[in-house]
Amino acid sequence: MSNKKLVITIIILGIIFALIGLLLAMNASGVFDLKAALADMPIIGDRFKVEDPLMVVAPLEDQNKALQTEIEELKLLLAEKEKELGTFDDEREKYELRITELEKSIAEVQQKDIQSDQLAQIYGKMEDKQAVRIFDNLDDNTVVSILLKIPSEKTASFLAGMDPMRAAKLTAILTDKAIEAVN
Image 1 (cartoon, rainbow, N blue to C red):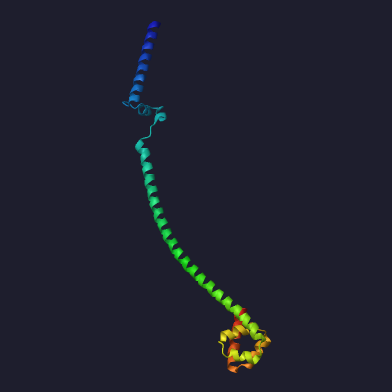
Image 2 (tube, one colour):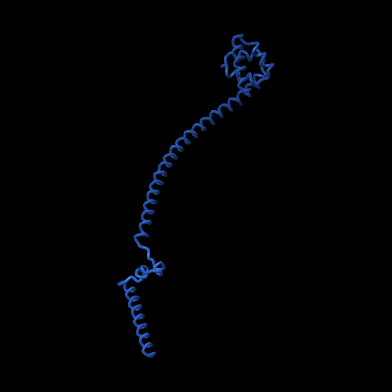
């Protein structure tokens, strides 16, 4: 009997291996999905679980849509920022133009200051009566700019030689300039 058992065991093993071979061949040809069949089996099924391709693709599609939406939002934001930048460029140009104008004004004031320094030296050497006659023909701002640059004793003698009304007016302007210089 032991020979019979051995023969039966070999036949059963042969049938099992033939079935396994058949299953593997069917899996390879695409007729039968062996992984899906094994995944349905208890105990060992967890090791053979196959993710549904639709389950994998759906989140990717959602993520793609979200990214596309974000790209569109960023494009709108970029366009808005470029528009703001254009506004800032316009403002910057206005400020640069204003700076140029102010620099010209400063240069003019500096030039006038140099000229008034030179005139102060000239008038500081003149006799009082000669300077007063010339001052009578100059505007108040020019006279004040000269008087501010010469020694105070000389300023006092020039003012004393002028018409009292003009001297008072120039004194008021000199006082205002002195207050401005302090502030």
